[in-house]
Length: 135
Image (cartoon, rainbow, N blue to C red; front, side):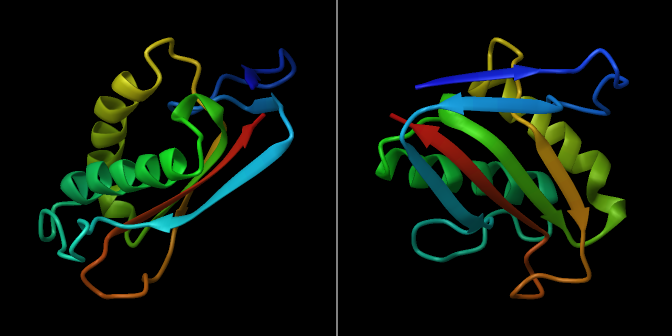
């Protein structure tokens, strides 16, 4: 499977670690439900530390992708939900650290960040979902 990302010349540069457009050639779509900062036992990682929850959520997305025969290189879209705009800066730092490992080429998938009133449990600060295309 091949994922190609680009930024159209008619748009300004992305406002963060993402590309404006991705396309994937393959025959199978993998949709990963929103993942949060809990470990395999359902225990919250990092308490109220959004960076720790973010790293765990990315790890959980990776586990889901692998279970479907996909990798981060197959991802064509990431959506993130944060419960407060006060968390954006710490989230960005954690994402930057994580993306340096997941996307060493710097070809980041399109991404949307939403600030929402809350998630399914009040202690959760971040939720991350992904879409991938594989052959």
